[in-house]
Length: 255
Image (cartoon, rainbow, N blue to C red):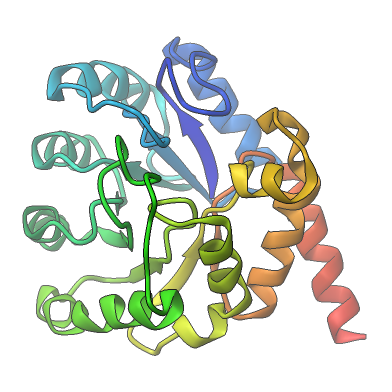
């Protein structure tokens, strides 16, 4: 899954793809590099970020959706707003990526349009989620959260569901490392797993890489570890390098 941020303030590439033509070019480039899904986001959910209005989100998303082909790859929309999701689904989006943890209105829309659904665990809102996150057992609590969604997901009769443990969303460095070391325990026949760890600040805390563009090595390491534990989708900024690392890993694992 290639990341396409249509925002002025995303932590890694904010402002780079506000122009719809440039955004479409970047999406096509990521597909050529091996992405199978393009994840559009028009509201930053980095720690400390403020929400944006529905109109602002739509004004960033719809011009890009109009230009993207709908039959060559999957398009995912990262949003928490039902009105934005509905407009995007009407414009051909295939997946809803819900970082709010399973909004019933978003689930209902996904069912109506028979879209895939990604449900992420987060503790708190983006504005304050990194202010002293606390768990007794982060892996167990995230698993319990996923299990609590089983019934409603089954009733929604969606074509495919993925769970995202939410690396960096209301988690300390220790919480993130616990989750990434125990991804296998979050797998289930009822869902696939998605990991979004690319360029995040946990890599800086481990390796001293304050600029997001300097976190490629850590991002790739987490992707390889995740796939070896059964993760199905890697959400990545650096598609070519991540695909190459995973392809080599698969060959070496077989041999």
